[in-house]
Image (spheres, rainbow, N blue to C red):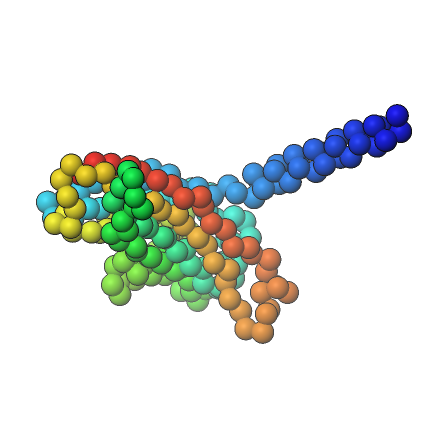
Length: 189
């Protein structure tokens, strides 16, 4: 009888721990990809998306203190094969970096997909919007796709920690990395 009570106690204890762990993880994972759209021009396949919930208070504080932050967007295009391994067609990594210039009181956004162009704004809200969106990213030329075939495009975003010398980021700021879940769109060309 005593062994049965101990077993039930342990089962209840582990169930509570498991639920609390999942609840904490759900609160941690608040960034997500939204409004992901795949479209095309006459020549190219394009991707549009944005990240919601990417700027936590600790990230905002780090940026406003002059630390650069980088978002990395991972995008992969596959040709779907029903009875075999999917064929990877494109694998694109795009980075967006934000830096605050406290002397000029402006935000500088650099996007790797826009070859050398820097976007400058004085509004933090506009800077957040520019950092968290991808508009018209060229994935592949339409000539590389076959008509009538199934394709799948996957994307996710990741925010890296601001880096400081000599591990000062552990002392000064407690920003954590985050990454969204993979977001997938299936389509037929």
